[in-house]
Amino acid sequence: MALALITGTTSGIGQATAYTLAEQGFDLIINGRRSERLEQQAKQLQDDYGIKVLQMHVDIRNSEDVALFFENLPNSWKCIDVLINNAGLAAGLQNIEGGDIDHWNRMIDTNIKGLLFVTKAMIPLLKQTKGYIINIGSIAGKEVYPNGNVYCGTKHMVDALNKAMRRELAEAGIRVSSVNPGAVETEFSIVRMDGDSYKAKSVYDGFENLIAQDVADTIWFVLSRPPHVTINEITIMPTAQPAAGVILRDQGL
Ligand code: NDP
Ligand code: 8X3
Image (tube, rainbow, N blue to C red; front, side):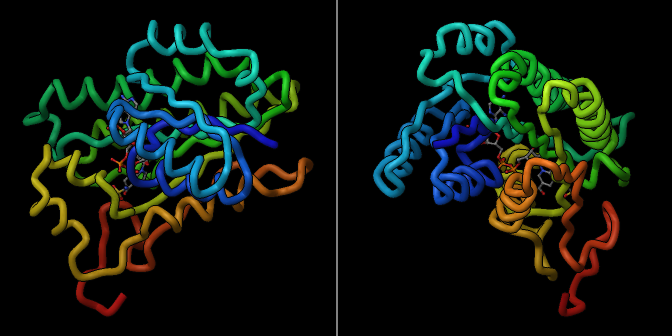
């Protein structure tokens, strides 16, 4: 039985990916800061799929807590085949002049530093299994759009780290890929708009956005290629979003 660790499973893409991998028979280490959701999810995954689930109730921004989690990981959970670096967020949609420094810190600390803390701790374990790392980037890591500045910057960094990891880890037999989505309706925009659900909903007005399962299916496609195949990166967009920051609304798309 294979084992995957997915960061940020308490909603959205991470949640859909946890259920997709459970369906494929993976045991799971699930992660998030919201403990009630994590507990509920662990129970449901165990009951519905008969898999083993370990909860990683850790804020990935805290390097000490991340390191401690791996130090205390029981031997029976150390044989990890897959790491999916998914936890992340956008905070705010403002030009740099008007930007909120707390927003910038949250994005940089989570999307870049948190991803690095988890990856650093996981590499020795993935070397044992010749495992797989999938980084969830974004179209925002390939292009930029008005007022996306710091979020786009963090996802450009994920794009660079994805390439760096692939180069550094190839000799160890670890495969590294990124999955880069366009607009997916999850809790992403609610978080970005500081909890304003009305504003968040309007992001998805007038076109058919991606759903989390579209991305989870893509992750599974990448992960399920035979060992001699690595998909370096894959970009998945709503048909109505031909480029970052460009959405064709009310055109039946
Ligand atoms: P959601 O807000 O629905 O999910 C984000 C997940 O990340 C939650 O489970 C959240 O859990 C977790 N998370 C956030 N911060 C931390 C932290 N410090 N420590 C641990 N877990 C954390 O958003 P999505 O599912 O949409 O986003 C998932 C990834 O996909 C992100 O990296 C995002 O940038 C990327 N992405 C999203 C797109 C979109 O349009 N939705 C498009 C392209 C990329 P909790 O709050 O419980 O900690
Ligand atoms: C988010 C992608 O296009 O919604 O990472 O900004 S987009």
